[in-house]
Amino acid sequence: MSKSHSEAERFGCQVCGIYTNTCVVLIVLLILLLLFVYNAFIVSDMRLCRWAQLRMIIYEIETNVKALRVNHPVSYKTHIGGGYYVSITSGFNCIDIRKFYVPYSQTDHKPTRRGIALRLKLR
Image (cartoon, rainbow, N blue to C red; front, top):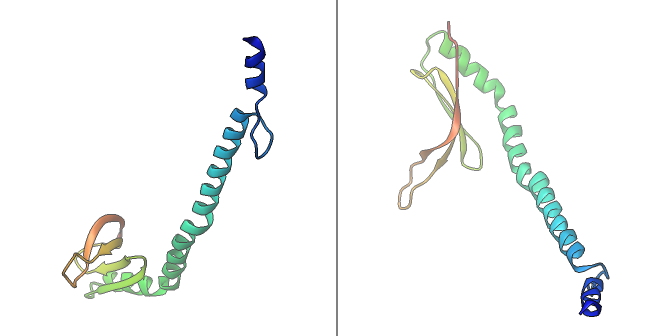
């Protein structure tokens, strides 16, 4: 009985020759590493593109905030990619960065709960 037990312990992976439990751990670690690389370079790339677009329109945002401070009417909304919009509107003292979607069989954009409203101190 002990002889077959020791043979089972020495049974290695046919691909790499390592013991079976160690091979499984290495495969899991490799999968986690691949997922990390995918999230770090592919998924975040889209976020970086939106950040770059936001940086490109920062002057327009500053101009509209200055107009709000002197009580001029403002209605500004621009697309920054991936369904996200930046909007500044008179009556709401904030810069709203929010994801929008188009409902089925409609043509106008509806806001989602995903987003942030940055409050402005106008006084």
